[in-house]
Length: 212
Image (cartoon, rainbow, N blue to C red; front, side, top):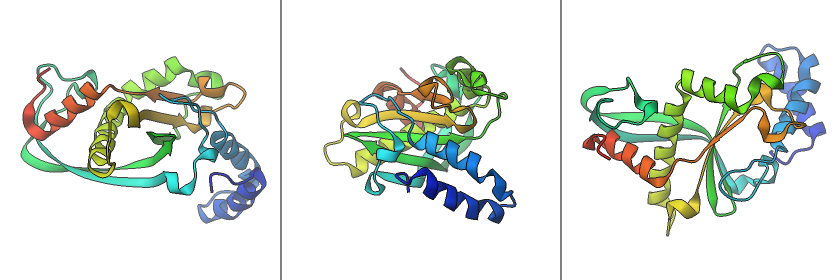
């Protein structure tokens, strides 16, 4: 329950930690961090929102997707995130799962949780450092694929879907670095590709190549 109080989160955490082989003594610290994440103001393309304000009916967890992929390579005008990536088979299926999709206002957002340890405190989770991590771990490629998956889903399932109106963007939350005192300046990476980029990647995965 994203709207749960810190006390309720603590009670649930105290029960869950031992089930995963962890000391229940960490419950207080974990509950405090979870509460901070849920109450953190997130600024995407639209108005600021918090996960605690997103109702159950406006979110989906572990959103699985699958769409056909045809032969492609990284030659030509491939986006930077696809450099060195190729698919040599004539056809296949690309499968994955998005941690969370939520709706805030009219816009839909992707969220991915990351537990990467970049340093001992929030200062090591600056926007610049997260950008380096996103590139070195090829998370930008992951984010592009997720954006295509959500775009295709909304085109099929949302009546009157318009990218600029409904596609909010992608958040990567590095929860070890989230500090409520620093707001979204620590532990939060956000990107909103334009419709042209998403469509170009979608068509390339479908076998049309990387033509501009």
